[in-house]
Length: 106
Figure (tube, rainbow, N blue to C red):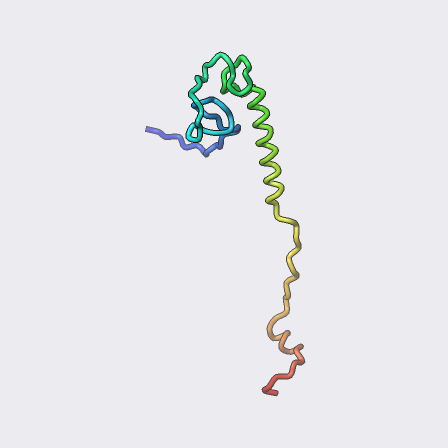
Protein backbone atom coordinates (compact mmCIF):
# COMPACT_ATOMS: atom_id res chain seq x y z
CA UNK A 1 0.00 0.00 0.00
CA UNK A 2 1.37 3.40 -1.00
CA UNK A 3 0.25 6.72 0.35
CA UNK A 4 1.17 9.95 -1.36
CA UNK A 5 1.56 12.94 0.94
CA UNK A 6 1.18 16.37 -0.60
CA UNK A 7 1.79 19.80 0.84
CA UNK A 8 -1.39 21.58 1.94
CA UNK A 9 -2.67 24.02 -0.65
CA UNK A 10 -5.06 26.59 0.79
CA UNK A 11 -8.19 27.33 -1.25
CA UNK A 12 -7.52 29.90 -3.93
CA UNK A 13 -10.86 31.64 -3.84
CA UNK A 14 -13.52 32.81 -1.41
CA UNK A 15 -15.40 30.23 0.67
CA UNK A 16 -18.69 29.02 -0.76
CA UNK A 17 -21.59 27.76 1.30
CA UNK A 18 -22.75 24.26 0.34
CA UNK A 19 -26.23 25.02 1.64
CA UNK A 20 -27.27 28.28 -0.07
CA UNK A 21 -24.42 28.33 -2.66
CA UNK A 22 -23.48 31.97 -1.89
CA UNK A 23 -19.84 33.05 -1.65
CA UNK A 24 -18.38 34.55 1.51
CA UNK A 25 -19.41 32.09 4.22
CA UNK A 26 -19.56 28.37 4.92
CA UNK A 27 -22.40 26.00 5.69
CA UNK A 28 -21.75 26.11 9.45
CA UNK A 29 -22.55 29.84 9.55
CA UNK A 30 -25.49 29.71 7.11
CA UNK A 31 -29.04 30.57 8.17
CA UNK A 32 -30.53 30.45 4.65
CA UNK A 33 -32.59 27.77 2.92
CA UNK A 34 -30.97 24.96 0.94
CA UNK A 35 -30.38 25.67 -2.75
CA UNK A 36 -29.14 23.03 -5.18
CA UNK A 37 -25.85 23.64 -6.95
CA UNK A 38 -27.58 22.43 -10.13
CA UNK A 39 -30.21 25.19 -9.96
CA UNK A 40 -30.96 26.76 -13.38
CA UNK A 41 -29.62 30.15 -12.27
CA UNK A 42 -26.57 31.13 -10.27
CA UNK A 43 -27.35 32.05 -6.65
CA UNK A 44 -24.65 34.72 -6.73
CA UNK A 45 -25.25 36.67 -9.96
CA UNK A 46 -28.48 35.15 -11.35
CA UNK A 47 -26.58 34.09 -14.49
CA UNK A 48 -27.27 30.89 -16.45
CA UNK A 49 -24.45 28.80 -14.96
CA UNK A 50 -24.02 26.68 -11.82
CA UNK A 51 -23.30 28.53 -8.57
CA UNK A 52 -19.80 27.00 -8.31
CA UNK A 53 -18.70 28.24 -11.75
CA UNK A 54 -15.32 29.97 -11.37
CA UNK A 55 -16.06 32.25 -14.32
CA UNK A 56 -19.01 33.81 -12.45
CA UNK A 57 -18.74 37.63 -12.29
CA UNK A 58 -19.58 37.53 -8.56
CA UNK A 59 -16.79 34.99 -7.91
CA UNK A 60 -14.27 37.05 -9.88
CA UNK A 61 -15.25 40.24 -8.05
CA UNK A 62 -14.95 38.66 -4.59
CA UNK A 63 -11.66 36.97 -5.48
CA UNK A 64 -10.23 40.28 -6.75
CA UNK A 65 -11.20 41.99 -3.48
CA UNK A 66 -9.56 39.17 -1.49
CA UNK A 67 -6.33 39.55 -3.47
CA UNK A 68 -6.30 43.31 -2.82
CA UNK A 69 -6.96 42.79 0.90
CA UNK A 70 -4.17 40.21 1.12
CA UNK A 71 -1.71 42.54 -0.63
CA UNK A 72 -2.68 45.43 1.67
CA UNK A 73 -2.24 43.24 4.75
CA UNK A 74 1.18 42.10 3.58
CA UNK A 75 2.28 45.71 3.03
CA UNK A 76 0.90 46.84 6.39
CA UNK A 77 2.66 44.06 8.29
CA UNK A 78 6.04 44.87 6.74
CA UNK A 79 8.72 45.89 9.20
CA UNK A 80 10.11 49.36 8.47
CA UNK A 81 13.72 49.47 7.34
CA UNK A 82 15.42 50.74 10.51
CA UNK A 83 19.19 50.60 10.93
CA UNK A 84 20.31 48.87 14.13
CA UNK A 85 22.48 50.92 16.50
CA UNK A 86 26.24 50.63 15.96
CA UNK A 87 27.94 47.87 17.91
CA UNK A 88 30.54 49.00 20.44
CA UNK A 89 33.59 46.85 19.75
CA UNK A 90 35.66 48.17 22.67
CA UNK A 91 36.79 45.56 25.19
CA UNK A 92 36.39 45.84 28.93
CA UNK A 93 40.09 46.50 29.48
CA UNK A 94 40.07 49.36 26.93
CA UNK A 95 37.07 50.91 28.62
CA UNK A 96 38.71 50.70 32.07
CA UNK A 97 42.02 52.18 30.89
CA UNK A 98 40.33 55.14 29.17
CA UNK A 99 37.95 55.83 32.05
CA UNK A 100 38.92 58.85 34.18
CA UNK A 101 36.26 58.57 36.80
CA UNK A 102 37.36 58.70 40.39
CA UNK A 103 36.10 56.00 42.67
CA UNK A 104 35.90 55.70 46.44
CA UNK A 105 38.85 53.31 46.38
CA UNK A 106 41.26 55.83 44.83
